[in-house]
Each structure stands twice: as structure tokens, then as C-alpha cells.
Length: 175
Image (tube, rainbow, N blue to C red; front, side, top):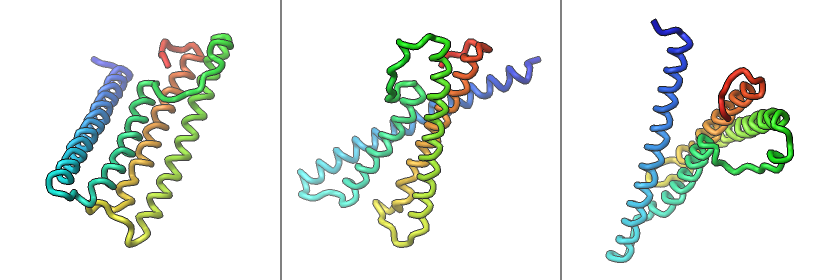
């Protein structure tokens, strides 16, 4: 029989892969929709002399969504922007703990940003008569902020836990 730890590890990996596939699918669909909408808008303007009034504002919002979802994926792949002035100067033992501090700090910043984004979206949702783009309320379009910052915080938290494990030398988990 399979042990509980093995089952939990396998389940976690399965859920992680499913979430990665979902992220990639949403990003792919978003980019495809942006290309189709932008091309349609160009054709409508050039051929019929007009376009969809809601297409340009929606494309701007879609670019924002693509950028934030791209940031989530970049954080997952450890390809996010970081300033590393000390990795080649410090001994490896100290750098391991610096990595832990860096991930904890980044997690804290992203949690604060996610919380403030929730406050922002909630306030916008409570205000009646908000702006709409293509029939979608502006607060719904801004949901990407808390979602993206929460996802980035989760990625940094996971990396932080892995960094602690590495720093204590209790596992061969790479950060």
C-alpha cells in the first residue's frame, strides 16, 4: 500500500501540474483573443470605416491581464526580476539564509499588495454606476490584481519553504 506521505506528495504534484496547465491555457486563450480582437478592429476600421467602441479599452485591460498572468508564470519559473548583488560575494551558507529572507520579504510584499487589491476591488464593486467595458463591470476587470498578487505570494511562499529546507540541510530541494 501507498503511504500517506507518498499519496499527499503525488496529489500535490498532480494539483500543481493541473494549475500550471490552467495558467498556461488561460494565458494562451487571452493572447489568442487579443490577437483576434486587434485584427478584427483593424479590419473593421480599414474596410468599414469604424470599429467596435469597446474593443480598444478591452484590449488595454487584456494587456494588463496578460502582463500580470505573465508575472505569475515568471515567478513560477524563477524568471522574475530580482536584484542580486551578493550571491557571488557571500559564502554559500550565508547566501542560503539570505535567499530565505528574500523569499519571505517578497511573500510579505505580495500579500500586502493582494490585500490592498482586494480592498480596491471591493470598494469599486460597492460603488454603483461604475464604468463598464463590453458589458463587464470595471471591478470585475480589476479582479486580476488580487488574483495575480495572491498567486505570486503563494509562489514565493513555496520557494521560501523550499529555501528553509535547503538552508537547514534537511532535504535536497532546489530553490
